[in-house]
Length: 186
Image (cartoon, rainbow, N blue to C red; front, side, top):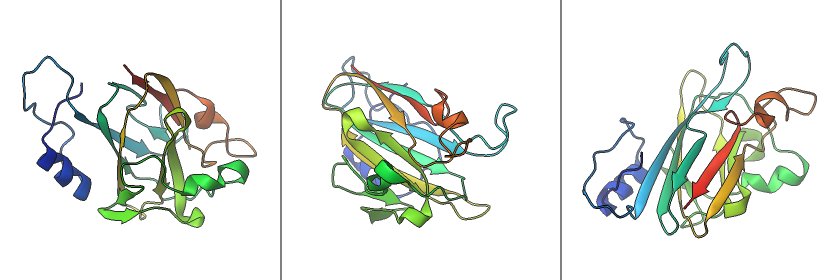
């Protein structure tokens, strides 16, 4: 469930990794909040009995047109999956409020292709977050904000070849709820 936040809270959340997964509501208004945060985790290993399948949790969510949406992904994946062919441009941050994302609090506009583990790409909304490799045994926090400007259901994908098959685009990559999901904008 989305909860409204104050502008100060939004700035603090964008500048530092979150320790908590939920936020307290600051208003009892029946109208949709102007800013929401989507918390996601990117995990690897043996998932649901499927070894080697990476997964982004909270794969589908709903927001309202006009809302500022902050997407925060905490990744534990320390493996690389360099982009190929038509997906090479997804090393660039796209569609964010300032043309950048925060990687562990540091603003970046691009992630080196050799350091990419995943992408969180919503083509229909023009939004892309390249996710760098996490340090071995650790994690990395990637945060970016966009405004939901149109309504509809938009499929997001990871375009880094991190799945199974000869080209790395099978298995989790083509299975809804794993490395693909939906963003519903009402």
